[in-house]
Image 1 (cartoon, helix red, strand yellow):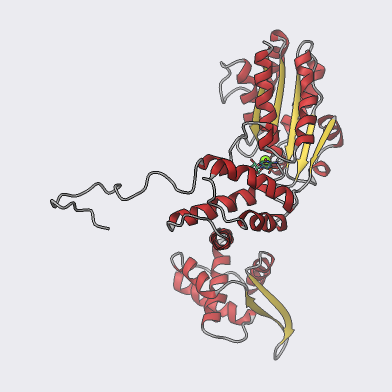
Image 2 (cartoon, rainbow, N blue to C red):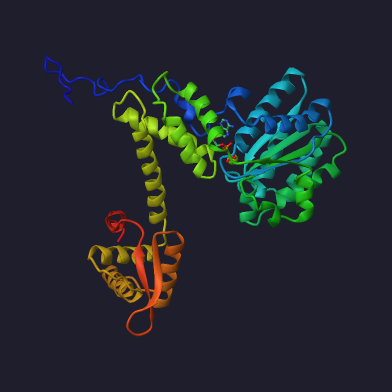
Length: 400
Ligand SMILES: Nc1ncnc2c1ncn2[C@@H]1O[C@H](COP(=O)(O)OP(=O)(O)O)[C@@H](O)[C@H]1O
Ligand SMILES: [Mg+2]
């Protein structure tokens, strides 16, 4: 690119970069956090939307809604349904001049019971400090505030399983027992989880209180994913930029990935971005395939770079043996290469038993595989690398 004008002065470096996309009309519509503007933009969730709205509508008639438990695999539309209904509820309450307090909390972000109770209480009493007060005192303040202000409070707790992971489910106990301490007003919980086994991990009293009503989200099939994608594509892209086969292809691929709409929309966005970057005016199957490779590659890279240090050394040892064209890679050879690396790096090597354990772990994450057989004396493992050796060497070279 030349940045000199005819008279020899420099041009602005941005002059050659197009400011209008020939592909995207509205990029937001394929972002993961896009909030649909109306019900039509959420195809195939009519039943779930209606059920949630119907349950929560009690609050507009001044009675406390039942608690709701929503569950289903990742990418089945739970968060989008919850946020849409929440948004509509606030609008309706405003219209009817009713005071309803609603809060949406993602437990992956607000990840302790303490943080959550503070966040909720601050909605009614902004003077509560973020830290310092004991949990029980904040809980009592919340009860007091709801009683004195006679309000209805609906709390959406998304990804509640994240709390159980930290064995911190105090907030669930507090929220489900709260109604028995309220004289006026009330509190309802909409609990959401991607974990289908979540119920088994909870105290049965809590789960039965949390799930007065249940809404299950089934994975989408390829046809449903097609409708979702077409709907988004209409908002996101200029007319005619997607080749006809693109959406059916993405829908079929995502249907194989457990009917996850997030994967489908991500793939659509990335395919279009790749096309845009190479200056193509249309998005084709070729872009979809490349986008898919890229996503897979990113997942793999992340898995490799986030391994513990000694696992990286072991994986690197297998890769360098493979590169050295060893036909048969045994545990013994891996261990001696690993020890050599440790010596070079001046770190203490783990025992050969621990290295065997690491090899087993690398097998469970599909980076290597092995068969157990007898070679010469005794039993040993024959190790196969499941990823191209150069890739591992390139990724880990800098760290080793
Ligand atoms: N029926 C649908 N219509 C339109 N978009 C959807 C639908 N279901 C899911 N999505 C979109 O797919 C992505 C994943 O959905 P999300 O609600 O986050 O799933 P979950 O919370 O079940 O993991 C989001 O970007 C969401 O907007
Ligand atoms: Mg979600």
